[in-house]
Image 1 (cartoon, rainbow, N blue to C red):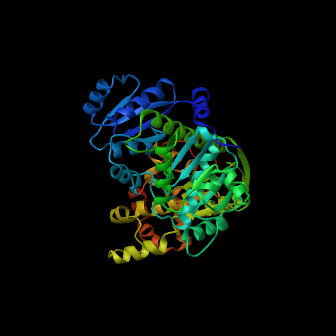
Image 2: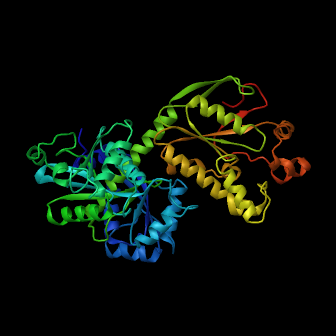
Image 3: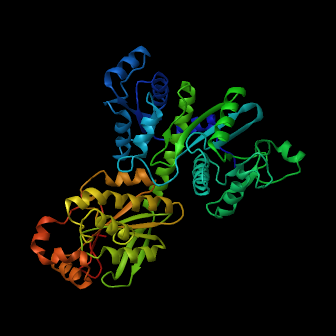
Length: 500
């Protein structure tokens, strides 16, 4: 099946898709204002313009664009403000406006406050050439200069995901080079060979390479060279070996062919509408349509994942009984709670029953954290001081989240950690949903304080010595966090748990 054309994509957005909130970094751009005015009238978007309010309002007056259906966020750091709206779940898309690309990418890529997922971010352009009745995706046209094999594989996966959101269930992807023959003299042909060999059978796609542009574009070229294959003359997507090759190709088509195009950044926590400053209003509208399609697909997957449950039988004390867990596509589970409640045991059991990757904050980063604490002149067992939390806490969680993002396309993930601060943030589930593109399930594990103390004493971990020396003070200094959003609550002091 082929990709939807831009006209078909517009028709689908007009008739099927709910309006999406778009956070714009630099809302005083005239073509962005006109594009969002059009898409808002078509009920595609709910714009939130970030930037100096006076400049945005002046530009809107100059361009005769009413801001009645726009929200304006007055900010002298528009990229930071727009990214924060996405992180809080108040926007589903990010759009580049009147702002320098480095400023936007700095906000997107910041480890603690950005939109990084651990995936390689890439620019994907959809090109439509009506005279040849051809439309296809090209990547990476704007970000990674020379991708490694691992980065190239992630670019292929992101491109395939966009193709599927555009109606192509089994994308035909060409891995591009100057020649279809593998030779050491052309390293890009070896790269194509390694990409093809490394890709799994699932999710379904048809991949061929190395292929030159003529072979990926024209069946006639394939016939003349006596070559056949799913992607010959019919590639839905072309993945290039370098930014130079991709950018030259896409610009050559843009400026020499009678074509239509649009593009976005993939691999971040949300689709990012990101094209050239020279683009006109129509190109920005097409880019918005692509981003809306991808975001709608993510949300549909999240809803589907959240709506289908399976019963998990737990046979190991203290978790005997049946527990309903969401299960459809790859799932993200977060097992939270205070020290000694049984998070790790429950997480292991959940991962085993769900065939998931287990990422426990107590083990995944432990050797590195201990070495870092020692290097900083701190006790290697310290996990409670303000200095530990300042230096290590967020970095530990970021490692877990980046590893989860790498694995989620292939397998479900269970993350185990206290997440005390996050349990008090009503926006945390929305932030997780935005970052990972799936509906998270948060498990809150509890038991009474005396049972916690007994378990901590039995496990004999040196890190717990300070807690046990003055248990009453530990309880006072580290009160159990109560979630401020809906969770799956498990009381490990009972045989079956409560609140399921």
